Length: 202
Image (cartoon, rainbow, N blue to C red; front, side, top):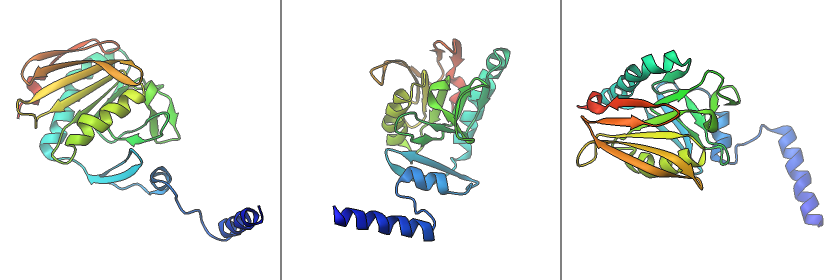
């Protein structure tokens, strides 16, 4: 007990005389200044800093935004191709989707992050550096965070494809529908949209 008290006293005096040193990836993320031109994420307890994608990668996200724009503006929603952080409720991981669709009153974590449960849809474009992250880790985290629809655009698959994940149960998506690029795929409720995936042809 004495050792514990001495340790607590030492910790308190150290904190009083020096700034707080981040102890976790999330704390380090919160302490970072803006890093223009970089994607900064917390995934599975790791802080990942990566450059933004290639022009082709970015254009796919922008093309998705253009395709959905008339529908989401009519409903008063907001869409953004890249740049918005989503805080996954629970583990508080912070992800930057290639596209996010949300209502304007989507709840936030702090000033800079949208809370995952208030988001309507996210999309990721698979790149060479993000294959496992987009296909596995983000798939799990978006479901855990109650994002209703996860759209995975995969130009690196043997046959380039688009997959829609939906219908969350027990923190996992129960339904996965895949279409080869060039076909039409349905984005289910709450989006309710027929997406022509030929916009993703490279």
